[in-house]
Each structure stands twice: as C-alpha cells, then as structure tokens.
Amino acid sequence: MNEIWEKLKSNERLNINDAKKILASDDLIEIGRLSRWLKLKKSGKKVYFVFNKHINYTNLCVSKCKFCAFYRNGFEEDAYTMEVEEIIDELKQLPEDVKEVHIVGGLHPTKPFSYYVDMISSIRKNFPSINIKAFTAVEIDYFSKISGLSYKEVLKTLKDAGLDSMPGGGAEVFSERVRKKLYPNKIPFEKWASVHATAHKLNIPTNATLLFGHIETDDEIIDHLFKLRRLQDEHPGFLCFIPLSFHPANTPLKGKIEKVDAVRELKVLALSRLILDNFPHIKAYWVMLSPKIGQIGLHFGADDIDGTIIKERVTHAAGAQSPLGMERDNIIHLIKNAGFIPVERDALYNEIEVYDD
Image 1 (cartoon, rainbow, N blue to C red):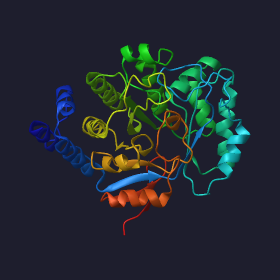
Image 2: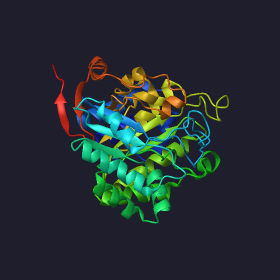
Image 3: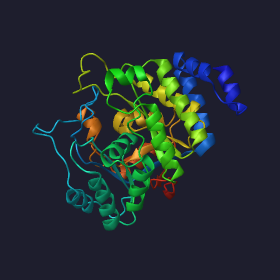
C-alpha cells in the first residue's frame, strides 16, 4: 500500500497489479484513507445528491437474465407496463422542484420504438425543466433492433424528443464468461461501449456501473474498471461510476450465493475511486448498499449518494431492505453526520444548493 500511496502523491496512474494488491489487502482502513484522499483532492468535502424520481416503466423483458428478480414474462399477476399517460400522471404527483427523472425498464416484447420516443417527448412537454435520464445501453441496443435504426439514429431521435442523459446500467461485469452463464441475451462489452461512445459524441453524458458479488472473480472486476478507464480516455462523457452489489434474493441464484458483506462493498467502492481517475464522480448508491453503508462509503472514495429516488422497483424486487425512497432532509443529515458538506445537484452535477451551515 505504501507503493500505491507514493504513486497517488506523484499523480502516477495505478496499474492492474496495483488493483490486485488493493483487492487482496486486508488493510481496509488504509484502502479507505487512500480513496478518501483522492476524493478530497477531486471534490473537497462536498458530497452530491439529487432530488429525483425513478420510473421503471415495465417488468416485461425478453432478456430473462438469470440474476434478475425484476423481470416477468407477461402472464404473472404482478406483470405490468406503464402507458405514457400513467407515467405523466405519476410525475404530476411530485413536487415541482424534482430535478431528475430516471427511467429504465425491461425489454418489452411488443412495444414499438415510437412508445419510447412518445414517453420522452411527453415528459419534456409536461415538465420542460426536468432532466430526463433514460434508457441503458441495453435498451438502446434493443430499440435499434426493433426499429432498424443505428445507435446514432436512435440516440439522436431520443435526444431530439428531450433525452438529456443516460444511466449506466446493463454493464453488469464485462466478462464473456459471466455473460454466457448469467445473461447470454444481453449485449457484450463492445456493444455497450459503442452505445456510450456514440452518446458522448452526441453530447449525451452518461454513467457507468459494475454489478459485483455474484460469480465474478477479482480479475474480472479489475478488467471491468480498466476497460471503463480506457473508454473514458478515448470517448470522454462519463459523469459518474456506480458499483452495485448483487442482491440474490428472489433470483435463480438464491441459496447458491450469499450477498457480499460490507467490507467487500467498501473495498470495491474504494478501488473504483482509485482506478477510475478520469471519472469525475463515484457514487455510493444507498439503495443497494443501504443508507448506513452508503454513508460509510463517503469515507471510501464516494462523493455522491444518489438521491431521493422515490419508488425504485428493480433492486427491491431482489430483496433490498432499503427504503423505497429517502427524504431530502434525511440525505442531508446522513451526509453531514459523516463529516461532509451536502450539495444538492441536478443530473449533470450543476450545484443547486450547498448546505454548509
């Protein structure tokens, strides 16, 4: 760890061997210290959050990933698809100062591309100032297949309709071995990267994720991070990286895999900050980590804790015990109690209010 510390002080990039040493180390406090130092260097004591709302528009999905507790085939009692009018009605119930709507869903077997375009344009028409962060690279690839349009044409159509930014989901872990075993119908890294590179060229900023804690190895986690670092070097436009710990409850992997512990979650979070030196922000996503572990994650390199969320469905379908949403005051309290300065942001990290009192 001393060698890694010397590299950080001299602004030298960490390499794959450094990453292996970090994951193999039992010195969690030192790993936290290094990642916290780098976080403070990048964003000071500020920790960001957003007043946002999640829309998971359908749980019907043709992908049928083996780690997913959310998807349905369509005949189940709890299978659902929200029509555009329902989405608008749900958003109209929110306070006017909501800054972001985060939209992801299953790969619906019958909805045409026009449904998604109409969804975005209707939200833009009814809520002209809200930031629309919608559709993972997996969804964009699917829209391309059902419409016959290229990635560029799909993204430009959605941007013209009102799309502002994209989430980072669908990445899972960039391993062909894992993909073939757990999500063979989901796009591989090359296509995921192509979607995000295309979005960045169109000035659509995006996020990136990692799903860990299932059957992946340390080397596969490390490879995932270095692929993202190269992609950001070559096609900059990623705003934030979010490591997501796998929840096995209600999935086919229940009973075969135990959820990873807090030490592993914090170690991967810290590693993300240390390796992804070209990513502006690292998120401790409280929905998957729990609010308490998310709070500790602020001392392990994270400078963002996401936001109010309001009715997240995907992770909770897999047994997440975190709340379905969190009040703004609770988030501010969480950040302040960790010794940091809460900063309310919009989806693009423009600062709205700094709670420094």
